[in-house]
Image 1 (tube, rainbow, N blue to C red):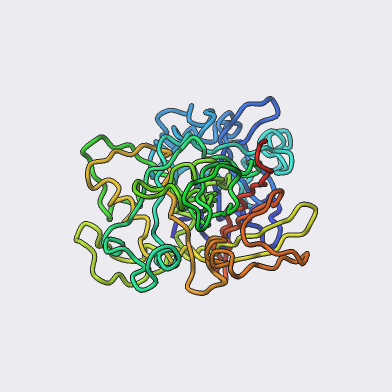
Image 2 (cartoon, rainbow, N blue to C red; image 1 turned 90 degrees about the vertical axis):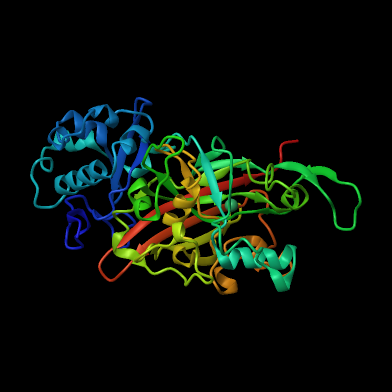
Length: 425
Ligand code: CA
């Protein structure tokens, strides 16, 4: 077992019961410091830890890191580019420093003050510069539901679906950090029964419950990453809300796929949870039948048991949980996704983001979008305040939460939060 994953470890930083961030997590993100600079950071309990200050004190000096400037950059791309062995070494060093029996930092009051800040005083920023973004479509339950609604209930999956981890290239610069407010987008739609499209605010604004992985490797054109190598080239995961305008999508998506219906804002959680921290939560994926082509065959447990929840909070109201799904339902795992992505020689860079596609579970209360939860609006959801939702309304806040948990430890993702504002006049 990785030392930093030992469930027996305790930190000298107080960790509230049920926290997403025990000392076994050690996620990576970017914090904004008091003087407005952005620094790499991690989090234990409710304290944010400035890695640049740990580096100032020399705590990373003996890890063999070729260039310590990676702890002072405004995004994590350079740190991620160091590769898996260094991610692991830094995680382990942080784990040692904040373990209850380690005196190197604890007790030196001035140093602790410089290194740690309460989470409520810290603004979190985009953790990486996202050079490229790919959105997969890897949940068989979601693809089946959408196929039933929009095409043919008897042939919901297209013939390629069980052979190819289907995906499209999305827009990376509209991926934004939790806490953002986004105006309802406007666009073209074709009203039911109409022959001509109309223009206006989307009436069917939706979320897509997704998890994205962040690549940790640079490859050149022509190079491929095999299924077996793929996980070493993945740094970690974030929650990913791929906001979608269903009416705009329906009118525009043939023949080249979604465009304006999905590029107006996708909202991620600020902390990247490393694959290493998620090791204890590996599970087997669904059986793939028919068998996949040899380059997509994999061994072992490549799915992860991560609980995923979505809440809607109306303006001035309390939040209601509207679905509970799990990352483990994905038909195509991330190793297959990355192997497929690069099998033609397509290059990747550290900080690229690959989203899973909407993750729906097998039951109607585990679907990963309003489209499916309300079955195109036919079965509205009831919120705690008595109001109903077919889709997202203006001034609603959509909150994603995610966590992996066993009897020993909980590794949480925190939240992805977005408030929807009325369309701009
Ligand atoms: Ca999506």
